[in-house]
Amino acid sequence: MQGRLRDQLQAFVACVISSATVFTWAAAAPDLAWEPVESLNADLPVGVRVYAGVDPKLPLRAWYVSVVGGEDSGRVEVLVSDDPTDRRETVSSFAADTGACVVINGGYFTMERTPARHAGLLVIDGVIEAPATRSAVRDDVRYPTARAALGLTSAGFDIAWATSREGNLQAWSAPPPHRQGSPAELDPATSTPWNVQDALGGGPALVSNGRIKVTTNEEVFFGTAIPYTHPRTAAGVAADGTLLLLLVDGRQKESRGVRLEELAAIMVELGAEEALNLDGGGSSSLVVHGQLLNNPAGRRKEREVMTALGVFCD
Image 1 (cartoon, one colour):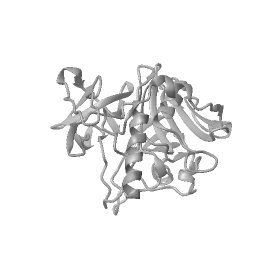
Image 2 (spheres, helix red, strand yellow; image 1 turned 120 degrees about the vertical axis):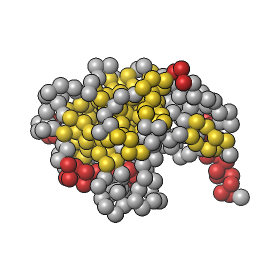
Image 3 (tube, rainbow, N blue to C red; image 1 turned 90 degrees about the vertical axis):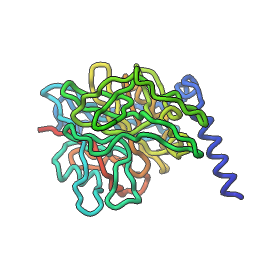
Image 4 (spheres, helix red, strand yellow; image 1 turned 30 degrees about the vertical axis):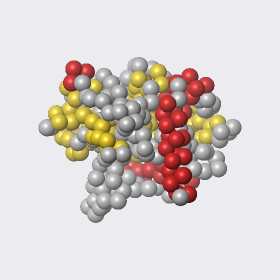
């Protein structure tokens, strides 16, 4: 009985959070005082900068990396574990194996499977390694899905609601307007071909056209723990094309973590025009020059993950 009541309470809280207005959460945005981490930036290209932020009142600790396009910056790639046993490794291992100067954890994956399987879209060098999540079932109701993904193109970075069908990628101007218990349809008229070299699915989207737009319901993340307060990893793209990689620590005395709406507010503060949530919780890890900057889920130990985003400072 207690377990059932707890589950009902959690579902109620998730509903309240996902239904909250933009104004409510924007007013409660974390007050992070950002400072450049000069000890790390000294050895990075001028187009790659690391910043640390602290809000002692919440409390909260966070870091972000900005990657500006151009020859004085870094090359960004989606990385996939090559571990032959479980296809999982730590972010520090990704950095050591590839030589990337910055590595942050990537998309969702199935932790209970060996080897791991990516949960959502994964594209490497134009090849779809894992398809986009086609649909999700909640309380025996099926919802067609178009979930947020980060795409790497020859022109830069793009965030879109993406689907994959028969080897083709489509980007949607908006996800289906699902509500709990009320599925909607994908409108083909709102999609266009999505030409990307690499892509990494996650979700939900956090920011669209420079404004907070957390599409928890539309991407069918309701009924999961994702909307709650957690350590977080997010990616965003600014108006000038700069890539923003954000990590917020959580589940520890020094940093409680954030809700999705708070995460979105931080990304808007950093100048993101578009942004999405990536895998978080114990997976959230950021490594720069081989140094782990955060304390993953307060355990001082990295979780092995399947994918990551790597910045190469050749």
